[in-house]
Length: 345
Image (cartoon, rainbow, N blue to C red; front, side, top):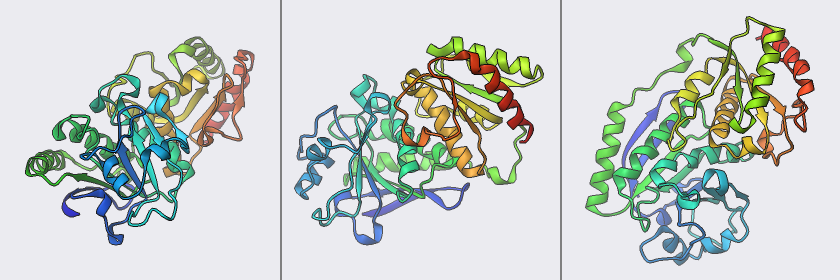
């Protein structure tokens, strides 16, 4: 592959987004990476002559076969699934796993949900910290027919912001095809984004705490959210609580308003339930809080287990406050404990 340009992310260590031209199936050992991101139509892994799936098939790797035995399937909420570790016989390939992005699974346009790639990576990286370098084409810009410019801009927006808040990756390699039109479009978008990007050194700035508590909840659990808010105010009337009652833009590749608010909160209550797991905004709130906890080494998340749900491993806290099944009588006790924890921050 030929290196074209890079964007340096100047927070949380040495992190870069790199742009290349070339063939992702012809990468040498010197440029190896841990995980390859590909895109596909829902449940369609036919190896066409023009697709990356086809190029992998010609190398002896069938995405269709990997799909029959997925390691993690997040398509219902985050448009992605993760393969198991690749077998040693897949010679000539320099990565260990595939993350398949199927943007039209949930009936939305790929540019609207490209941020799901990074939302899906958060629980994956929590369980597989050895994944530090990823590579991808300009997803959905092949057989799915979307333009390089239309996909690369939201892809870069999401990549920049997730690396800025601390997503534990060191390199994101984006590769465009060997054609003059594709390369020129990619360079134009990448150069514009690079010029507009101004890294904020969060380590040199002290962001004032404006909220004591951020209540993260599914709007289907609004009643329970209001009850725990009342319990908190009964225990400490002066407590500064943020409760989002607006519907955020679920079609956005990145939610800056979530990060800006979460970064100014001492604690985040997560009201865990099946509806919580089914909410893209809730998952984004939890993931941002989880990354912030990891970076600051503080227990920022206060998990309240509201209703039994199939929690992913990284959400399974030993010290969760058990209010199953909707046992709101325990909210006063939870509020007293949380206020006590906040007083120590």
